[in-house]
Length: 358
Image (cartoon, rainbow, N blue to C red; front, top):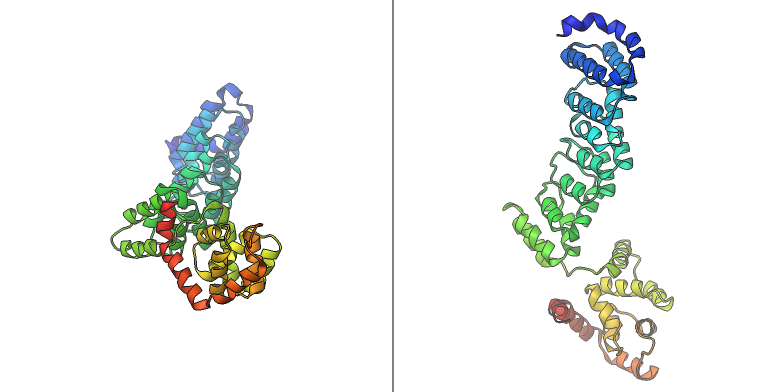
């Protein structure tokens, strides 16, 4: 077929300038036939000629014709690159999907631009490509909806940056299907799985354990068993900030006192939770009670002095302390740090039963 039509190639560009719109679709099919028949033998100049010819015709044909063109060119490794780029960036998912899914002509820069600007149908198509770099998956994790995230997680040809993988795992905390797919990946480090399980609902935790393969299930079961109960949404940001400050060595009595005195109650709760290694929900409940005793116990266990303890008690309840300042201070002085530490340890262990009963 190609041999019969090869002499027409030098004349095509000039002749196609006069193609009437009603014949454009048929002409696209004819030119596509010519290209597909001889694609493996074309040199770079000939491919560029087809790029120009099809590019001119694309502006006057409907999306149905463009979708057919996309399906025929997508599998070809030497398809006209400009045409491929325009098809991939078409607003119609029906036109773009065949190329986004299969074409090897698209570069990472093409894929990231499309992923950053187009709809979820485009992103879903990209997420299924057999080879994806960190540059592309970062954008997909950031912009993709639930179906994109799930498809990406089960794509074992997709590579993730540490930040992208952490973000994907974070999204899985409330999505059992996504959590299962993340747990099955071989490239997920233990600390990322731990963070997922730390924030996940009990239902998601169970699904992650059930989905794990026999080679990794013991590790996941161990992580799930050691992960503390889920942090509620209101405390999540304060908890993350407190952990970051602890890693940086920036949480101490002075910083907690400043938080309490300045009315930053969430920060105060999170800091005490991190310092005492107690679930943040426990600390919030204790500090919000009508009696100061629980807050005093936490402060003694943390090694804080009376001025800090008083500020924390007052921050948790405007009516506290319930007795005189002198009586509350005396109660604080009578409580030894070792006793306080034992009581806090009891709270830490019994939090699961406390939470279930509340």
